[in-house]
Image (cartoon, rainbow, N blue to C red; front, side, top):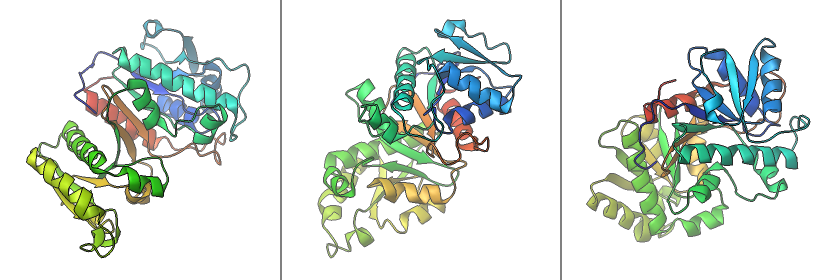
Length: 334
C-alpha cells in the first residue's frame, strides 16, 4: 500500500467473489451479523446476492443500484451495485464461464470505484482461478488483476493475523519460476513494501526479517548461493535506506521468532513458504492485504470453498477481519 488518503466519509465496497463459491454467502452473513456497520455496498450480481441473503434471512432486502449515489445507508437494505446481470443462478460449487466473468466484472467495477475515490477501500470475497481461466481471463489472482488495472506500481501480498505478518517476494507462479523471479529488485520491492505496510498498521519502526530461499538460509553456501549473492545485498541496501531489515533467516525458524515478537513482519521468498505458517494458525482471522496500491484492498485468507458452498455453513470471520483491517488502514467509519 502506498500513501493512502483518508476517505472516512466514504463507504467501503465489498465484491461478491465467485458466485458459485461461498463469497456471496459470507458477504450476506456479514451484513446480517453487523447491523450497526452498514455503510458499505456489494459490487456484484443482484440475483446472486438476493439468493444468498434470502437463504439466511427471507425478510432481508437487497436493492439493486447502478451508482453509489443511490445508496442511502439509513435502512436495513443490502445495496448491490450491479456489475453483472445473471439471467439464472450459476450452479453452486462448479467452475463455469459465467461465474468467472461475473467475478471478474465485480473486481473491475470495484477497482474503478476505488481509483476514483468514490469508496474508501475495497474488500474482495474469494474468486476461483480456474473459473477465471475458463472465461478466458488468465490473471492468476486478485493481486495480479489489481496491479494490471492500476499499472506502473510494485505490489506485494501481506498476509496478516493476530500473531504474524508475512510479505511475499513472489506470488502465484511455479517454484522453479519463483527462484528465477526472486532477484535483487524483487527483494528490494518486497522489503520496502513490508516496511511501509507495517507502518500503515501503526508500527513506527518495523523490524523486517527476510527469510532465506534455501534450507538453513544456504548454510554459508553449502546449499545454495542466493542468500549471499542476492538476498544479503538487498538487506544491506534496505538498511542503508533506514529500514530495520535483518537476515537472511532460515525459513524453518523465522516465523516462530516472529510469532514470539522478535520481528514485526517477515519477507518470505515464495508463496507456500509464507502462506503455510499463516494458514496453519487458522483461517478465521487471516487477512490478505495488497501493498503498493494507491488505495486499500483487503481480502479473507481463504478460497471459494466449493465443497461447502450453498450449504449455509460458511464462516464469515476472515471476511469480517478483512473488513476491519480496511477500516483500520483508511480510518473509515461505517
